[in-house]
Length: 78
Image (cartoon, rainbow, N blue to C red; front, top):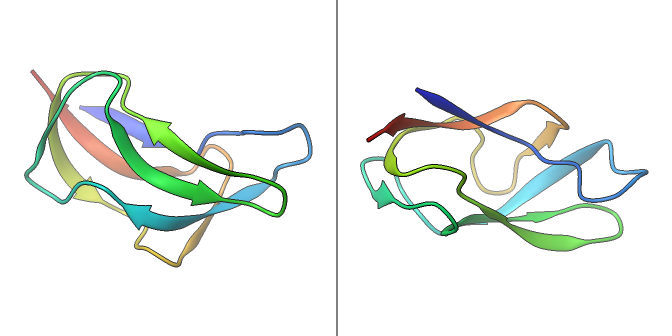
């Protein structure tokens, strides 16, 4: 099981909002694939997948905010 965590895109970033998920639970994903778009006060960026596998759970829905390091999704690795 791989925990997808809210990344820190900038030095002052403390939390981020999930603008859009590009995947849904059950989808196969591969390393380098964009999982979601994250917005903060100063930046909007895509979060890339770090492993191959299948989306198990999406823990933070679109429009919700999470602190840096919070688990936002889980992936069952191949």
